[in-house]
Amino acid sequence: KKISTSPKEEKRLASQGEKAKSPGGTTSVLQEELSTEELADEIFRQAIEFNASHIHIEHREDNLKIRFRVHGLLHAAPINPSKEDVTKLIKYIKELAKMTTDQSNTEPIQGRMAQPPIPQEKSVRMSIENQTVIMSIFTYPILSGEKLTIALQYKRDLVVKIEDLGMTDETMD
Image (cartoon, rainbow, N blue to C red):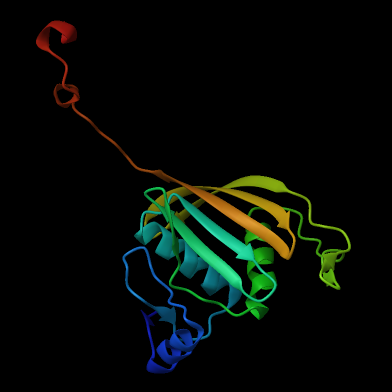
C-alpha cells in the first residue's frame, strides 16, 4: 500500500492544527480504504520498518490514536484510521492473540461505561516482512474505551565469532 499525503488531507490536517508525523519525521496518511486485517498488517509493517519497540493504540471518544515508541520516544503513526475502524481494529488484534473479545457490555452510556473491558495479556509470534516478531499484547480499559499496547521483540539470528567479543587472549585461554 502506498502512503503519502494528499493535498486534501494536508488541508484537513492544517485546518485542525494537526500533522501525522511518522518516526522518520515525514507527514503522511493512508490514502485508500483498508480492510481491518490490512490496516492491522500495515500498522505492524510500519512499526517494524521504524524499528519500534512498542505500538500504542488508544481508543478515544473522538478518534483513534496510534503511536510508535522508537528509541524511547512516542511518535504518531502515519496511519490515521477513522473512528468507525476503532472497534474492528481492536477486536481483530484481540482475536489474533486469542483474547476475550466480548464487547457486549463495553459500549459507553452517557460518557460512562456500563462494564469496562477486563485487562488482558497475551503473546503472539508472527512473521512480518520476512522477520520473526514476538508481540506481547496488553489491553486495559480507559475512560473512553480500551487501550492496546503491543511490545515488539525482534528475533534476529545473531552469529558472533568469539574473536569479535573483545576478550583478551588471556581470558580466552
